[in-house]
Image (cartoon, rainbow, N blue to C red; front, top):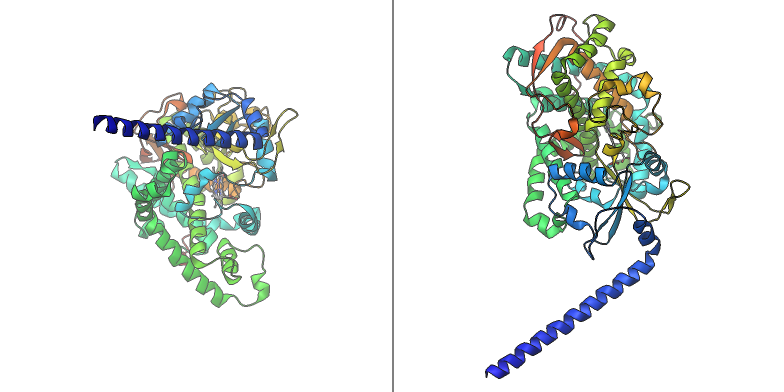
Amino acid sequence: MVLRMKLRFETLEMKAFVYASIILTLVLILNLLSRRRKKKIYEFMASLPGPVCFPFIGCGYTLMTMGQTDMVDFLRTQIKLYPRICRYWFFHKPYICVSERKILSAVLNSFQCINKSAEYTPLTQMGAGIFTHNGTKWRKLRKQINPCFRTDVIATFGETFSRNTRILLDALQELADDGKSFDLFPLLNSFTIDLVFENFMGCSINMQKERPSDIPHHVLRALEIVLQRCFNFLEWPDLYWQLSGKQKKIDELIAPLKHICREVLQQQLSQIRKTRKSDAQLERKPLQFIEVLLNNIDAGDLDLDEAVEEVIDMTAAGSLTTAMSNAWSLKVLASHPDLQEKAHQEVFSINQGKEIKFEQLSQLVYVEAVIKETMRHFGALVTGRDVLEDLQVDEKTTIPAGVSLLLALYELHHDPELWKNPTKFYPEHFLPELESLRPKGSFLPFLVGPRNCPGNKYAMQSMKYVLANTILHFEFLPVETLPEDLSEMECNFALFLVPKSGFNVYVKKRRTSQFPADSVNTAEATV
Ligand code: HEM
């Protein structure tokens, strides 16, 4: 009996061994075939430095249990180890991480690299809009929306900025009277959401006064959860993702914003359809973003759900970014009273304490430098593209089709060869004397080329307007002192960097402020 069992066991072991050998051989053969097929890619990858790669998983181990802070640390560490260009195999997928200025510009300016890489797919769980589209779907919509951001269109937004800023200043006044510290982010994000709806959707949702104040934090949290998935391969399988409850959490977090977007879209569609009189009017250029969506719905190219996702995408892209950047600027200025005073003096010298108008923004050289320096430190960290056709980026380097690119903006923006004080907050980097010395393509917060940020001019106007008018009337005081070396700050990753300690500050009314006597335009919002 014992002998029979032993024999059976041995046969089982034997069988397992034979099966394992067959599987292993098949995997090896497939691997060899794939290597032959992707010879160009393997050769190119082998020519680059990078972390140790193991069979099958490649360097996947480095990203296995990536949290948000780890993502930031990972990039910062890898960048130091393998500067300019390096390679990663994440399982069977080849990636190169680039921060070399010339290669970055060549990649971004080419039409061979307009598709977002697979890591963006999880972002569609928040809304599958222009930000994540690829191919002809993206091309068509992008061409249609570009005119919505024309300089002459932006110049007409002065009144909406003025009226909404007044509400923001009222809120700051209350917080100054209160004397307690508060979080800048929800305040600024409610303001930027109001602006995006008025300027691009043609209606006011009164986010600052009438909507739940936790929406900004909820959307930010949803973005952080989704981005964690983008960079954590263990979370990629849909089954795991659904079972983990994270999708449910995201749906709950963005439900209120989604509800607003749907409500606005439906209301605006019926309104626009009623008032649209002729085809000539329909062809009026440039159309507002919402009108572009309406045309697409009428043409059968979008259904209502898809249009809602476009609105969510535009709202997030247009409001989170500018709010986050301004919150960083004010947090840093609070910690550097000398820089805040310099910026305040510049603003004050223009209008002696009265509201800064849209047309005066071009005079704000130092304020603009503060905003750019903020984006250099805390703006988009990294972006991803797929190489669709072989792309020659310089005399020696051709990136083969099939490789995915991680474009490391953070490293470009901290390259000691380009920046006098890479890790310090030093707005002088952007004053004409230093700016003129830097080569083209050294600073790409909005990227360049066909897939750049279409809202870049709007964003700069918006950030300058708000920063100027807030520091004109209020002084911001720190809750914490920031380290001199800003790369030591603990941050989460939500496309931008988000401080782990939050955006808390104190605010004090300036003695020179003429607010609210210099009442800005008090016209009521169109709802
Ligand atoms: C501080 C402000 C902003 C920064 C730093 C910024 C930066 C960026 C970056 C880096 C991208 C490319 C992302 C990628 O490819 O991974 C992008 C895309 C985009 N941005 Fe902005 N952005 C800002 C404000 C805005 C504003 C105000 C709007 C609209 C009102 C906007 C609309 C968009 C859209 C629609 C895209 C997707 C474009 C496409 O894929 O074709 N952004 N932005």
